[in-house]
Image 1 (cartoon, chains in turn yellow, green):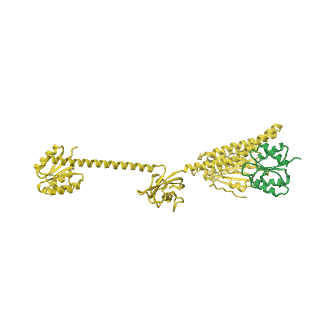
Image 2: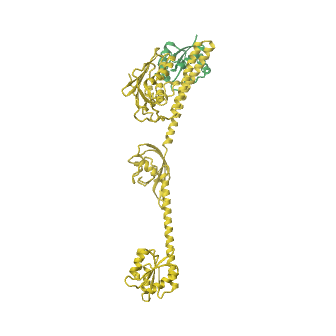
Image 3: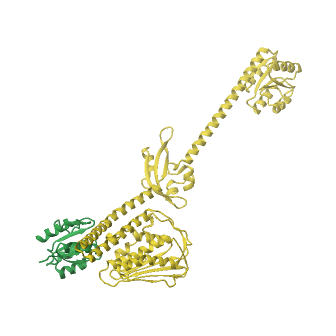
Length: 507
Length: 118
């Protein structure tokens, strides 16, 4: 690209002479005959070099220099001085003139001055390009860092000595909100004072990284278990001015751990039940074999009955465990209430016959549709019914037992009632009957059945009330809405194991 | 004279198993399904030996044992604990043998014979 040079001189001959010279040197040339027109031409054409005579009518060369430099500091101005104004020419250097040449004009000196000006211009251009490059690079890098900071899959904050958050990444801002100057204990925990064993305060104290685990509350009200790492941020003199805190959400790991722990608990409690179960299996085998050996079919038959009952139990236990270990949502469908309770009765009736216990049903008023997870609700009800059977089987204080099972619609709700005159429950059993892994049945129970029943009924927004007395029997009433208008809760984790309401009353 | 064994367990199937085992071995038996009933049976049946389950409703094994020790005539009756689990109850002295479930029948019958021979 050709550089443009503006020539300002009041003498036309000199303008023409310089013009020819500069064109020969490869410049684009524009000309002005006085200071004023020179400056306005400068404003229009933006030449990179100005060659100006000092003595001119109107605005002189010094004025032109000052105004051009004020307008564009990058433009280079070369002064042309006559004999009488050498002092002015020297002075002009103070106002950032690139150089000056004297009249009469020496070609070589002018060329040299122009070269120097050109070099300065290209140096400045390079410098500017370089600076811009650097700025872009810095902008790019810091945008990248910011993006990393924001996208790190954990919460990152920086706190000062007052524990006020000075910076926070996007994930933190999304889950906990960010008001500059808010303290971390306030944002994370809604507390008014620092947490005990604060790892940040420790880091301020020791200059070392520290670790902690805690539970925090997000904006949406959810509780998260977080694992915290801290590290000191120091100033140029090595003093800790801030602490960076990195917190990982480990809620899922903790939930899994709870689940595994309760599975361990379950296996522990089951080992008790299983030992009894195995003993009874031994008993059944023994009685059957000795009956067969003696030709005593009666004895063999009772041995077989024992075996069959226990095999049923093992089946039930395995199903309980499978049910418990599977987390699932309710699958609501509309079922016919009458058909639903008849199916239930058909499951229990053969078992009651087998045990010789009369099973009385009353389904008058059990009409219309019921919205429920039929599978889950049915197994919940079977648990209650089988418990009633067990209670009769275990009761040796009397001979005649009866189980009554009734169902009816009552307004917008469905009421199931199960009554037996079996063993009944003492206070402790009644208080613990819905607790996970509690079983009063020794070798017969896993302690899961009623826990799951209670859970299923709660999921259906229902209510269970229990009346029972040891030696007299048990009355259980299950009430659930005929339509599930509220959202179902998830099942599987035992986290609300203590939350159920138990309506046990003594009579 | 035929020796009589009192079987105490809340699980009817385990009671019937022990009942058959002892009867087949030539002993007479009587049964109780919890500690309180058992204390009555001790008085009325006057057994020569007692097998005791620890975990039972109403009155468990430990409380039965405490009750048994209070009876002048009964406190020398030998007891064998047959239990599924749990630590040895503090009231049980070292000379009370414990058989754990599932039961080793030979071991149990051996223990019974040994205790009754004393």
